[in-house]
Image (tube, rainbow, N blue to C red):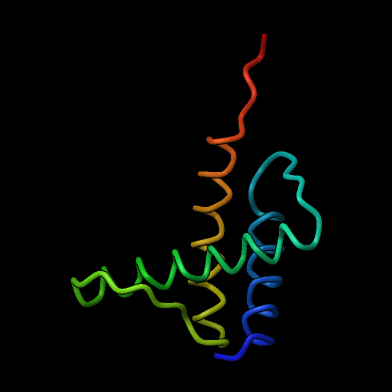
Length: 90
């Protein structure tokens, strides 16, 4: 997949994941794209692992199922990011 398709998939998946996930997530447009690209890799790799049983670093294609897998991966990435950057309520 070329870089333009990665950026489009990342922006789409990251924006949908940020809209679904409760609470405020910062980061701006670049953070959203990066989150979506990471989510695409996470979702694609987990989807391949559960379907074939082997772990391979892969990403889905720019299609409706690919976007759904990327959004699920981006939701996981948002959750992990919030765990790592959570501030204590002192």
